[in-house]
Amino acid sequence: MVQKASLVPQHVPQEIPHGDMPGDKIVIDEGHIQKANTLTPPLIALLAKILEQKKCPRCVIGVCGGSGVGKSETASLLGWYLRQLDVPCYILSGDNYPYRIPKHNDAERMRVFRDSGIKGLFAHGVYTAEIGGILHELMLRDQDADPRLCETHPWLSIYQATGRNGLKGYLGTPNEIDFSRVTDIIAQFQNGAQAIMLKRMGREEAQLWYDLVDFSNVSVLIIEWTHSNSDFLSGVDLPILLNSTPQETLAHRRQRNRDGKTDSPFTTMVLEIEQALLTAQAHKAKLILSKSGKLLSYEEFCGMMK
Image 1 (cartoon, rainbow, N blue to C red):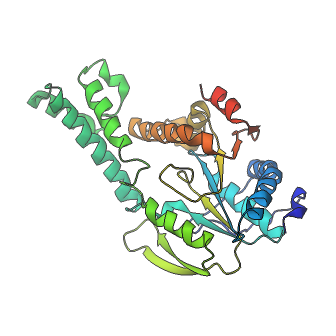
Image 2 (image 1 turned 30 degrees about the vertical axis):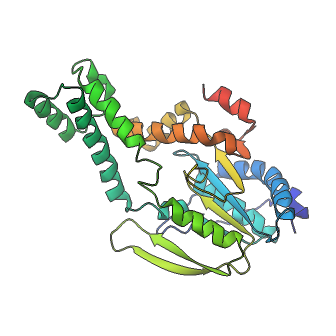
Image 3 (image 1 turned 180 degrees about the horizontal axis):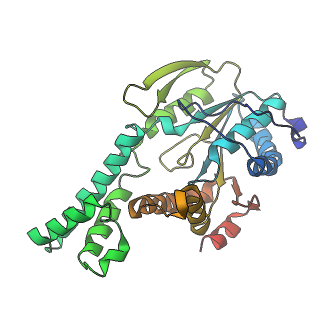
């Protein structure tokens, strides 16, 4: 069913199926289409080999990458292309599977950072009431993660370093995300389940429910998610990394924010930790695509990320 893979559809409709997170919207541009066109031929070749080796002819593809690389759009296009080749797909959004809705998860990330940072000050024996007061003012201004202030407040480097280490123990780990549930979904799919109960989580407390999804005619499950190549996740056959260098990510964030402003120091820290996770896991990716749309070997990827 994948012999026609060398053919890439020339026209993409305005509306195509996308990930299953409530309220999710995609905006496809020519850049996304070019990337999907580049990925499709090698993807299909790999897919054919994987399906040939399986008793149950099903495959799980993971589309991962950092902020602004177009995971949702690219995954949607790949799914649409596969459907044109008579390969039925379902696109699952991993963003349904943190334990907390986005605003609560953002608050928990901040809590973990600050709690770990203050404990670090205690452990190093430098915390005083005066430092506590200064730190409180910095927190109110969202400046406690700003490395530029360490010159003025030398103790802040301890706070930020230990806070960052604490955040590393939360971000992209089972403390933040229900990886076991996603792994179980993958296992059910790989074992031929005809229907699977999937979680739906929006941005508000009341936006939480489950849908029983029909998989009886689905051959490929595409998981679009920052963490779809995580070491905590099992069962992904074909991880795809949409790469972005730190410089490219920064340029994208500046362009997206109003007046060219950069992100808050804390958001920058979160993005840096996520990028480090993606880089550490990149050796497992079957396909790596640069932000400019070029296929990379792992060695070329490592050279770009130095």
